[in-house]
Image (cartoon, rainbow, N blue to C red; front, side, top):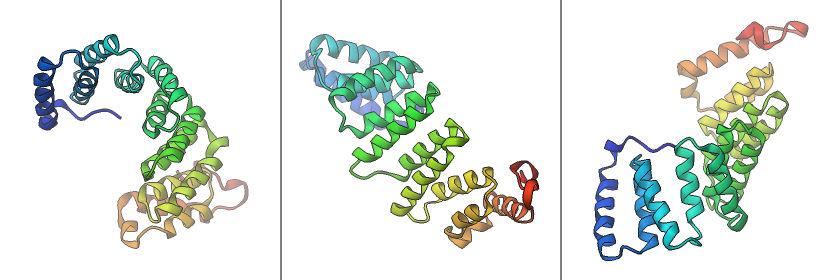
Length: 229
């Protein structure tokens, strides 16, 4: 969610300069202030972004997008509680906004509220016109963080993502890692079998293969993650 370093955004700076000129002519335009505030956020000038959002709220306190923009800014400022609160207020009125679900999920992850974060990523997927593999991966990772009882659900999310994005390496890698952590070599091999063969030569996949082969040679009570990792 974090923006790139300021020096990597010359286009952002030029857009800010353009809005500066527009705001000289239209100083009371809340929409222009919101646009500039979000550009400042991307530029990582959080103080300037906050000033613009605060000014926009004074001019137009009922602007429907302000809670979203300010909630996203608060997330990047590390004020996760306030970010969650503001985004919750926004989502109560705008439950169709996929990006807002994803941003609140990130705030909840930072607060170590893993199950609610996973639910929010699920809502982001549900409301996205074109959900990305990253959303499925993020939902599954939130469930991984929630603890071992949630891992079967994480695998279901991965499988759902793979139905839409076959051979998506990030999902196959996460599924393999969960299977290996669960000492389930059959399931791990199932995910690795879906990988393009040339990728199996990469070091990270060679390590997974070696771990899986270790599990395949263990039986009974000896078969546990500690022996092979």
